[in-house]
Figure (cartoon, rainbow, N blue to C red):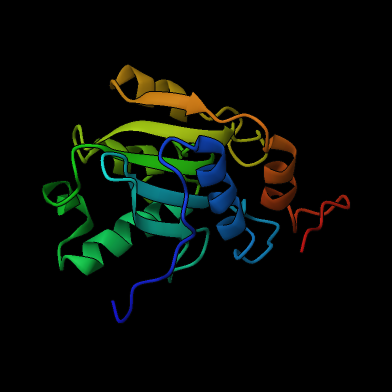
Length: 177
């Protein structure tokens, strides 16, 4: 990558501030009727360092926010995405404004699969809201992650804003800047 992005300074363990940052990234995603606008932040919790950020459709293809984070780490280390477990710190955590998808209607690998194929590198996922049943009737992302030993923690306080941003472009007056 050409240059390192600048990130806000967030205190260690300030989950709401990390979620607010992820929400600010979600706002960069183009509103569309066929996807949610989601933001994600990958963090080394031991040293409180942001490893990568992402948002829906940031990178070419039908990319999800979590997927963009992982692709950026792969690009930075010149590795295939499935091998980034080699370089992720043992205390890597993921903040995502919406529950990671367990199913992709496009046929692409789900975000849950991407997280789980890294083995035990991501042990905690902080989530802003569950996925509304608009595209997939009942997302089982949280359940599948927890069954695999990943802790899923809800971050309270931003749900209304997250849903407003996520559903912008879906019609019914849910537009956002």
